[in-house]
Image (cartoon, rainbow, N blue to C red; front, side, top):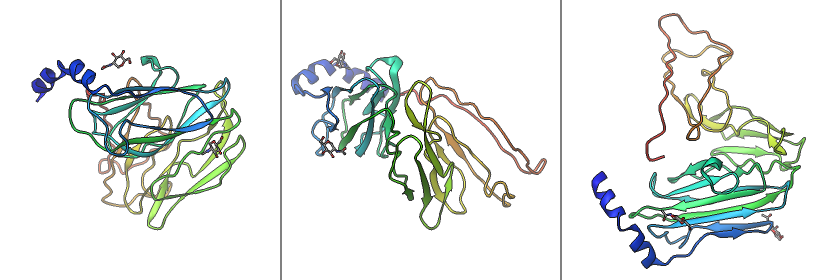
Length: 264
Ligand SMILES: *[C@@H]1O[C@H](CO)[C@@H](O)[C@H](O)[C@H]1NC(C)=O
Ligand SMILES: *[C@@H]1O[C@H](CO)[C@@H](O)[C@H](O)[C@H]1NC(C)=O
């Protein structure tokens, strides 16, 4: 498979020229939408589109996805916090899960969409909005969650809860604070809802907390929980324990780390 892909890639330049697809561009304005070429009927192979959203100084840009469906790992949207240069890479998005809202730290946010030689999907539609420096922006809905509060300015609080049968993991209340150097931001990452009685999950975001089931009460017998913490390429993850008490020799916490998959 590896060899086949390699050979086909040699023809990339030729086929892309034949497609003649134009996409991307410089975007200004208080709000708008960005769609992958051909949306919602599928994007072309060999796409290479760069959108650069530019707003006024001291403003930031919030981007949220309305639809997201890309061939996992091969068709990718890279998000840059600033101009589309490697040092500004904020995240790489692929697959079929709707990403959380993204807020730039400055007045430029860029998207780079690349697709490989085969397999397409519906594509993506994103909505961007300019945020004045005193607002944190909508932190977004969470699957099976309920958001309480509709004001996102400095000093405002919003609260998350979960629908019946689910419990909240992480901070339930977020406060919009002034953070040094980058205007307003939420003080904690968005929490998530997990099935009651289950444990573990996948965590993203720059900080967060993990606790054993029912903490600070006792965990149950026969618990078997796995948490995955995902960071951006090049970042490292630090884990700090504030409490640790397990039955000696019978209950364990194992920690392992891996590099990101090589396609990233
Ligand atoms: C986008 O801008 C238009 C005109 O400036 C405004 O009417 C509309 O409410 C805005 N939409 C959002 C989602 O902010
Ligand atoms: C994508 O387009 C940019 C400029 O538009 C070009 O510099 C770059 O080489 C292209 N990348 C690929 C993989 O075609």
